[in-house]
Image (cartoon, rainbow, N blue to C red; front, side, top):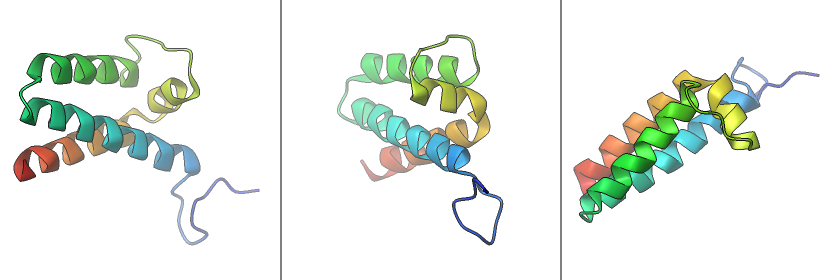
Length: 88
């Protein structure tokens, strides 16, 4: 059985999930910065990047997913965070 999200490509569920997690955390971190909770937004960003790069391990399924697919998670984190900052 294939792990592909769509049958025509090789995009797996784990990659998709890491991207969604990165996008959600990026949106929240960007929004926190936009409403002048910069320290909290930066702390959230540091925790997320540390988890994605394997510098810190969190025992959750989300933490393992992000650690296994860091580039999808980090790319979505940066893209959505920048989009939120551009709009806000």
